[in-house]
Image 1 (cartoon, helix red, strand yellow):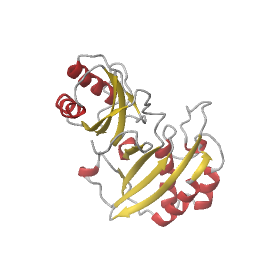
Image 2 (cartoon, helix red, strand yellow):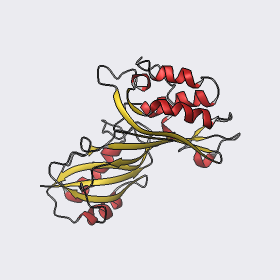
Image 3 (cartoon, one colour):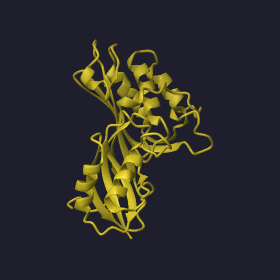
Image 4 (cartoon, one colour):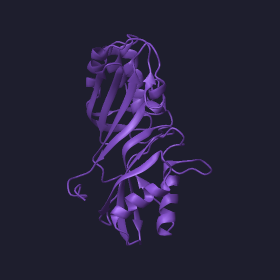
Length: 253
């Protein structure tokens, strides 16, 4: 049996998240159905990062085993034939039998986009959260400094996180502005459920002067579960890339 990794892009608007759910449209369900039509096998895939309902992805990674001898190039072309237009396989790579799409990842990159404008944009309504009041990007970036490093991110976790560890390592957290479009970019070894959406919710409060930077720092270090936020809507969030050690696959294939 061979093992293949797929780099997948999708618009998550009409899906109930990446993970398969009974009687609900999901990214996993659509890809597994397409794989079944292509190979005749019942294949279960795994994702590098779980995305919630309505969240998008530019560089999600899926891994699976197969008995098929089809070239990897055929998997890209044929799966895109069977997949709906809001999901696409961008690349496919052969990987070793021991490859684990989630555990072997060394970091994930997300962005959250805000439309900071006096008027809403119909063209961006599915990919950017609308904030009509002016945002102080400099203050938001100052607050971002408290996120860098290895910390207990319980304040930015979901209330249902339970007893799982909330310690994560954030490598990069910053806000950029391009005209009316503001992007929060965050890179970490892995993310807690709703972590990015809770973080940008707290940062927007800083940008609106509803929370000062020092208060944000205190919340970030409080270790109090789900004390930051509120979580902003899913549609502004996108998984940009999953990073692996060099040599896991050949990017030139």
